[in-house]
Image: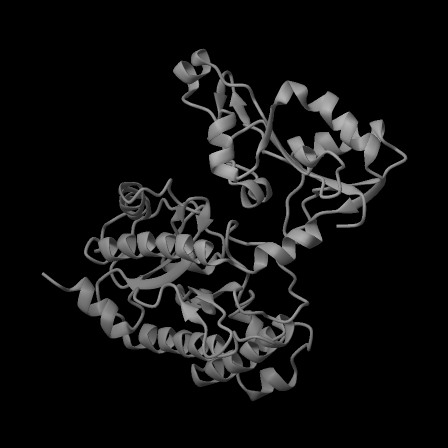
Length: 410
């Protein structure tokens, strides 16, 4: 942080639906990352150079009471807030305007926490947005800084406790996949598969899916973000699953493709093994020093070779291709990897070299609309200082023979 500045982080709102209904609360990942506080109407202020030592890190919480505990459940009090966060100075939220004014009188600048994820949808005004507007109105003479770049670096390198929580999320996802392999057969519906997964996730103390699940049978698998999950799974089709459990706010993100009838056709097997080959080769490049844009180009070249083998493109297609949209993009139109952590599409700088401790998905795919076939295979991998990346999902079945054997066990 710049000299004599402070930083402020707000919790998320509880979002209304209609009447007196609300969506379940989900904490803003930045305040959770920095403090461990998983509660609405919370504010964290960091002021490293404050002359009052008690104000160098401060939590503001909604004041709890016995009545609130009866209606909404127990909330953090000052003692439990310290136990959760390690932050000694805890005030009630109604004290924020007065104490914040004192802190700002001493500070020369403020770090504001804007959402700078490249895929962010910022149509809905957040609690953070409202705070930023008010600060700029009340303190126009202060210098303004961005907290996002600092957090993008910090959050992209996972600590050991974070890896443990992500491993737990992946283990819960594994339990869900193992449950499905004995459940899927012709005539089941996509939403029944979703229900089986949710059952297994909840019984393992996950709060559910880390993101909206994709359970796409047949041609539905060629829609990259298919989430209707309302069609019957028919004999001979392949189901593309893009699902993952959350655990303690940490995400897992897995993709598998399984045959409805328990056996892949020869063509399905060929396409599947091509995707698996690309995935295995891509994983070898998830090492320190790799540049993500170059990595994606190299994966594209490997995919190009597989698509030629499958007869989906030929040398003429490659010769005449648009360099900005290569021929392979007709059948593999998305990227191979993204950061994962507290967010499924976690924060981090794609232009910076990969470092040890970063966690990435690896998820190549081939989508052949004319054949009603989509295959995507995805695991979550931790970059190591030396050697290959560690696969948090390494024991989840992925080979064709494994999947067919497990699906046909009596």
